[in-house]
Length: 334
Image (cartoon, rainbow, N blue to C red; front, side, top):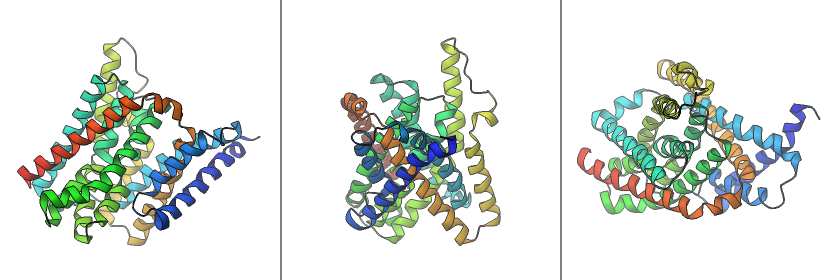
């Protein structure tokens, strides 16, 4: 079978799961998020009836390439003008919140004896934008595919918990202050889709503010990738191992992250037609959902369960750190 034909079965299967997940999310289980549904369906099928070799090439391609395209297209949906709209205190809140999340993830990961790759992926996935951030960081730190799958799964489950609970927590903490509720949701929830779904449960003004705070986190993706690449290189040097990632920041950044910056810059300068931004947003979403279906199909559920207690402690501990730090920072700064 030709290489491109070998990819088709797994790619088509992943896309079918993505379609089913979108339908389930829009009709049966509204709000949980199509990426999470696709991930769970993929895990269920991939560890039971879909285990034949014929699917492997396509799911491997979908897992890698479609997440890359999702990151690239995300750049056409945001602009740097967001920074101006949130003012100095809003930017300060996001920078401090991201710093605390990253430091918390690294410290917890070290205490629980997770690998460098897993801790950095968890740090970036939670601090920036979920699966898209994990996809961008993976090659820059030479993380293993299994580490990426575990991180994507845990981050999406964490995001689902926050998505469903933060509307209530924000009401108890900030009553009907839409700006502060948007800051809490946009500053903590993992993926873009989960942020919008969570804020929509509150009201439209909260959704607008939450999206602005989330976009600012996404803009920081490039800085996080470069910093994490340097951390990895430093750790490798300390072990006497030569990293295959170049010291040049241009080479440390994957092509699709560079494309993300280019599209974001062009959108900030030219202001793309809403139809173009809408198309990019839709395609990015479909790429993410299909990629997560493929990740689910390839995830070794037995290994996930084996690390269940440690993963639960990691995810739960990091959730507490994120929410507690956000509540404190919002109270002080905003």
